[in-house]
Length: 94
Image: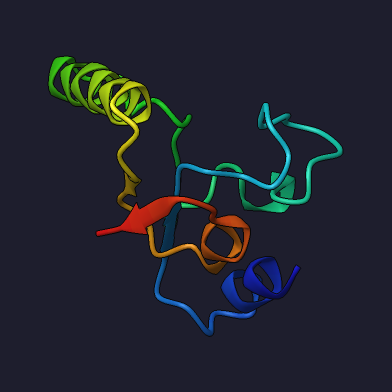
């Protein structure tokens, strides 16, 4: 709500988003629907993740995590998310 208000009031020069609190991004009834059609707003679907390189990295990382579990080693997690750290048991963060 604060972001929408700031854009509508002209307090932001522009905004670009590709992740939303409610998905899919609907034209009506969505918290961001007031931003549709504005020249100072870019709204993309969350698709930038689906590149060949990203999928290869996801596959490689998933396989590496599986080997860590099977070998009895701590699982390496590349995240700075404090929620993950709070739940961690036998997990190493890098």
